[in-house]
Length: 381
Ligand code: NZQ
Ligand code: ZN
Image 1 (tube, protein in one colour):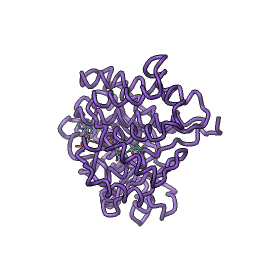
Image 2 (cartoon, rainbow, N blue to C red):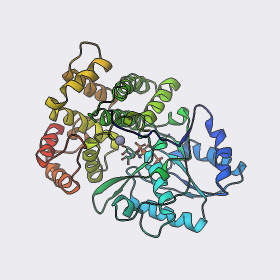
Image 3 (cartoon, helix red, strand yellow):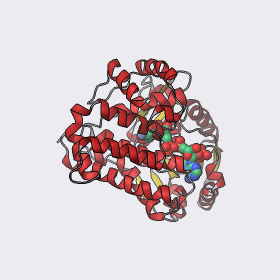
Image 4 (cartoon, rainbow, N blue to C red):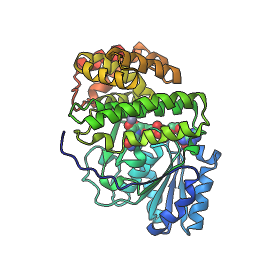
């Protein structure tokens, strides 16, 4: 077991109607909020109105930054920072999925500096020494950003997507109402399930010996498959939505890293190349890359795959069963398992390979070479 620090300052408020607590939670942090949203889903389903009401009742005035795209770009964060500075915001209230909350974290970090936030992600700027407080109203279960210190942005011009982390960027309070995810389309619901399974796998394939972490990762995957099937059949099942929401948070809030060295995350690195090239949804990219990655490294991970198979399927299941059944599950809930299903044909392979070489994603444990990229690409076709 490796040394570790358990630290997570985010207060999570979970359940039906929890938005009613937002006003009292934000009040101690100031009088002015920058509200950040995506392309409009929160206007249609009434969540934006509910937040406005809370802010008004708490005596907090607000300005809205609208239009964060899925797979968010740093230019939006820079523009929102200018708006936050002009408004002299005391806090950021993010309402959305990972893209909106990650952008809010970038805005929080960029508020006190005079360079583009992208410089943080490129490691060109020193780490921030202060950040605005971020409050998150989660509307899509997937990334875990609601209870972690990470943010991921991309540059379309540079064809690069990078993560950044700072303890200053844990949301102060995150509000998780499973009913807010009823309106998530079945596509993004499935991609979210794929993402949370991928987070569990990334930490599971950190080969450090941490038995509780491994058992927890396997159990999160087992439950994600169970409730993923349920929510696919019945999108308005509160129990299914609630379980998926909590599983997604638990998969990337630090608890699975205890006793480990931070996870492998090579698959995430490869997926980020797909997302910058084709604007594919993050979870859809992961459900394509992970099976291929497991087949490629099969001989090195057979024992670990057998453990997963026996915990998530049945006591006699084999390593190969795990890969096959995970693929079947992805097909069942309708997230792609091959590039061709996502409309990416063989003619694009050279482009993908070039981008992989340019961004050079590496796993922490399963180092990736150019030969690995080619083989994994072949398996993803
Ligand atoms: O933009 P709007 O109109 O709000 O629509 C969004 C968007 O089209 C829609 N949506 C969200 N909640 C909804 C809803 N539609 C109807 N009803 C609702 N309640 O869903 C679409 C996708 O939203 P997005 O935020 O992009 O999805 P997700 O939460 O999967 O976030 C993906 C981003 O998070 C990053 C990914 O790389 C990607 O950029 N990640 C962040 C991580 C982190 N910070 O820890 C870790 C992850 O591995 C991941 O890399
Ligand atoms: Zn992810």
